[in-house]
Length: 99
Length: 178
Image (cartoon, rainbow over all chains, first blue to last red; front, side, top):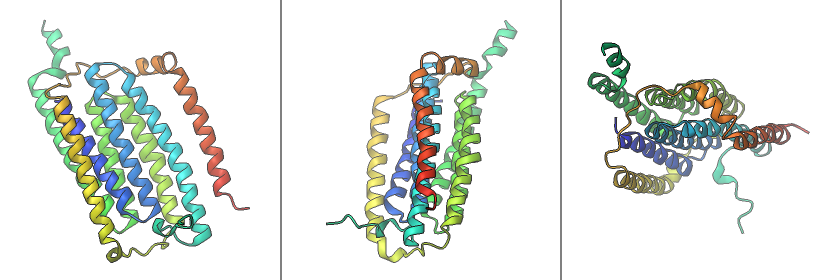
């Protein structure tokens, strides 16, 4: 197996995640797209770890999984608060700070 | 010698072909599911497509010899995070009637940015790592990962612990009714 094939798969997933973050208006779907991006990074870390035959990359992949769990918890709490206050989770409607 | 060759089977020709086929299937399934996830109008379906992508990533980790990361991926992502997403969808259901006509312009720009990201990162990757090969003779040991977390990476580990505690308190404070 070449290292490139893993890196290209991760790049494709990353690009799809970026598209999701930019194009979707639903707050929950934007959080899901961020998970896609974090997973692409994890694939890169584990692939480099396999090439170098060390466990450093795998350890950092585990850290990223933990950070992703924390991020989803806080992010979904914010989406719920948004829904409770405005009856909508459309991110394009949140523009109170616009000058 | 025969026994030694048996130990070396992970890098022999047949195994490499099988690994490449497995990688191809996983990659195609993951990319199709990811594309469906960001384009589908039904949010529950999007969560289920996310499960497919995450399971594919776990397969990739196991293919790379990182068993512990693969199992953790299944436990934490598919077991916990997706359930969290499904609860989030359930509690905000019907909050958003997708009005797709209104944001065609926005989508076009998003496609442009996504393709640019793919081309630039893909080009840089192809340029930098021409034919570096992944030839792992044996899966990495979970004991080794545990050793290095609790010796070399103890400071980041403690930082992640504090971060998780902060996120726990933060989520409760943000989401509670008062």
